[in-house]
Image (cartoon, rainbow, N blue to C red; front, side):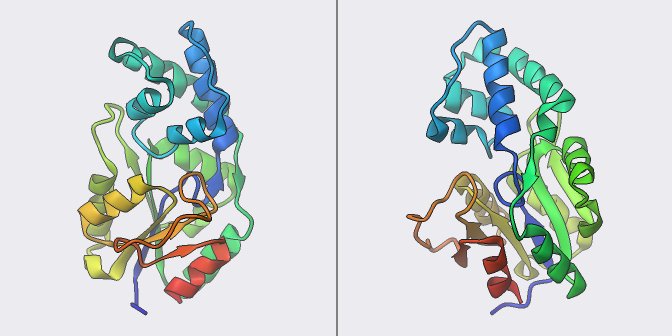
Amino acid sequence: MKNYKLIIFDFDGTLVNSSPGIYNTANWTVKQLGLDEVEDIEQLNKFIGPPLKDCFKLTYNLDESLLDKACDLYRGKYEKSGQYEVEIFDGVENVLKQLRDKGYILAIATMKYREIVFSMLEHLDLVKYFEYIDGTNIEGTKYKAQILNEIVEHFNIDKKDSILIGDTDHDKNAAVEAKIDFLAVNYGFGYNKKTIVSKDMIGIASTPKDILSYIL
């Protein structure tokens, strides 16, 4: 087992179940645009992980001409109410506490705005566990691999001593691009119990507690 120093967590689907707020806000947004809502959970799950414009394309097949307006509507509604429709996955806080107490540096890499995630962490009383939170920019041009690189550079830690923990292929691909290790979790929105370990994963955690067996 490798001795990591920097543990980077994805946010949605890894630390928290934010799906109610995301689904409700996304469906509210397309309804404002005069379009049909999506009720299928598997389809809605595509809305979690990628950049926001890609989410609207993947989930609703939204026309390019509507993407900017959709993103503005979504962000306004999510900041007002959607962000508070969230709960911590069972066992996550205990994992964070153990890792912090063991001296690991904990950070978050997310495709949400940093300010939104910070607000959600405050709401959940989880801010105290993290030394750094990084997210996308308002233009939506900042991708996850770039975010990972910024976090690693911020702490001046070797990439071989860093790992990303996430629940989707979007996370895995970002870790591969950033050249850091990746641990999958299958209790979130992307991977599930049928997911098998690939060459780009060090393993799959089925519960938050399982994460510790790959780190400690």
